[in-house]
Length: 329
Figure (cartoon, rainbow, N blue to C red):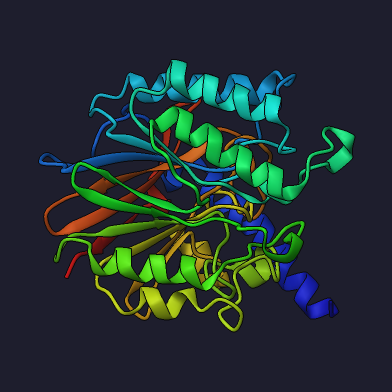
């Protein structure tokens, strides 16, 4: 890394925290309530909860966050948890995660597998299972929770008539510690599910990994995203209208729109007609933005627009200078 690149990243890091955190630039605390009337779907979005069976803090954070969602003035229709459900992929932690969401979530949970849930199997000698076994555990526990009989790590579901498509690591040829591996079957599944979505409605693609070069990936965590030269997910997404891609993984933190534009690290942006939403980490410290735990966003769907509103579920604080509105076509 050159000195000029280091200075640019350090400046972005400090400004991302400062401009988002000073009170007069966007704090609001009205409780969990939709911004407008006639909300068609109200979704709570969090990512990277990193549950450990014997852990205290992150399990407590998740419980308290879900309890806050249960008290929302505008009922939550679903909760999306965009990956790294556990920290080390061990089965006791997977069981703990599902026990928490069963007990405390006020609505169905769309669970998205992340690199820690599969690629980190065996990490730090917590468990000696293989990545293939970790993948199969994620499928098994999701089936037990949802009552489905899936045999793939990827799937789709509907909330209030809106389609959610979940992508995941298939562990091809042993997989990779941090990156996703995807078959042609999974890419074809994504294409066909998008094609079958109701015309004029938004459709939500949930994948733990961001897309390379989008949402500030080169600055926040270079080479952490899906490379279109390997898996051309963007080309599939761009074939359809009103597609929203929801990811986590980067631990990027909540950032104001100003910081996103100035340093090219936006939480939300549209590229070639696709809207990409990058979630902060809920359970572990963030960077390039609000560093605290408990952060996520509310996603509100209306007849003609979708609103993305970052919030801290542990404090109830909204970050109004980090909110985005996207018109539907």
